[in-house]
Amino acid sequence: EKRSSITLEHGAHRLGKRTDAQMETWRNYGLGQFIHWGLYAIPGGHWNGKYYAGAAEWIRSWKDMPKDAYDNLYKEFNPQNFNAKAWAKQAKDMGARYVIITTKHHDGFCIWPSQYTDYTIANSPYKKDALKEIVEAYESIGIDVYLYFSIIDWNHKGYRSAIPETGEEKRAYEDFKKFTANQLKELLRNYPSTKGLWFDGTWDKAWIEQTAFADSLEAELREMRPGLIIGSRFRADEFGRRHFDSNGDLMGDYEQGWERKLPNTIEDVHGNDWDCVMTIPENQWGYHSEWRGHVKTSVELIEMMAKSVALDGNFVLNFGPDGQGAIRPEETKLAKEIGEWMKVNHEAIYDCGYAGLEKQDWGYITKHRKTGKYYLIVFNIPVSGALRIKLAPGSDIASLYDLAEPNRNYSPEEIHRSKADGNEFFIHLKHKPSQPMVIVLESTDKE
Ligand code: FHN
Image (cartoon, rainbow, N blue to C red; front, side, top):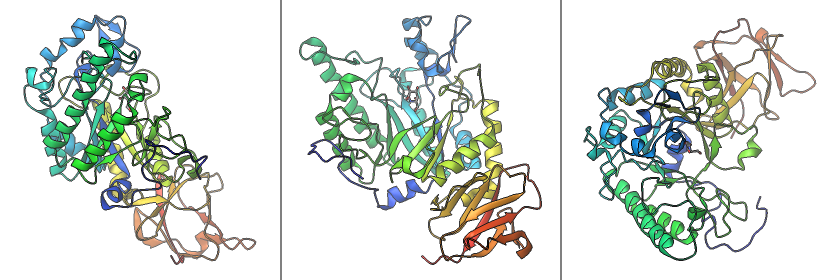
């Protein structure tokens, strides 16, 4: 519900979800892969033997990192182990249906040969267009590609986080705006098969003030590429509101605010599409050679994915290949484990969303958007061994089976129906699985 309704020129231009086919595809992905790959992968969170405790892709901003040294790293960018086909194959085996790749992070280094700056891969010893290799490899294996683009650009002379009203700085920022627009159009021209832009680095005061410019640039980009998908991080409204405009309406096609965190209830997502982008360690996106603190397990990640889908979102897991282009063994192991689970259980994730049933403590319930089947994704088996489920009034269980064992229906002895509340059932489990399990429930619901 709208909180207020003032007239906005640069607020949301659409209320409610997009209903076109491209967005429908996006909504149904379930699982995506994020890749942060750029010059920061070379130092990998260290400089001169010192450990940088921040996110590896931010190392340039560290007091112990000489800026000159960082800005010359492109002369060493020559990833000999980079194999886009191997990345794509691993993502596919994990079960990812889309990838978001950093074309340019805050440092400004472009992994495509942009004609608008010299700070690109074309001037590195690698020379080749890595972005093109990535787009081709992923698409040829059936994974849709989205382009991450940082508005913050520490390399561009005109970039500022804040600018005065007039004067030279202001003029230089105008050049920066032009440059940004040029690069975005160049990306859409050069990689016409990609599906959307994933914006980042849009929180600076200077950028927030570019309301009209950003709004018209977004319109131009959308016009260039009908169906293009852009999230809520690109622009602010005329009152400086980001993501949600001054009326509380979402700007862009989906909410991009779920970074390293998840909503807890369906109310938290306000009926919008959304994605959650998640790191494997606590806060490292680019390659850091030494992960400290908690590193998530595959079961934790699968749980986050299930929770995302159960709340109508996509889950996007980040990978940070190293300076030679190799994906680190820890990530490879997790991708493999998630892939093994997905091989058996992907039906509970793909093309599924919010089930509309009461949340239960044992896990998450998703619902297939076409078949209407419910998937009970179980993470915490109660000591009683009985899983409670509450169906819609008047509906009954038509069939119940484990996704891993579709030919064995649960027997009547295993399903207890509550007498007091006819829609409440208890499913008695005979075994405790070592992995999160999925039970398929077909109900007698008529929709
Ligand atoms: O500063 C970046 C960070 O390095 C990383 O790219 C994440 C990914 O969503 N975005 C920014 C922080 O919000």
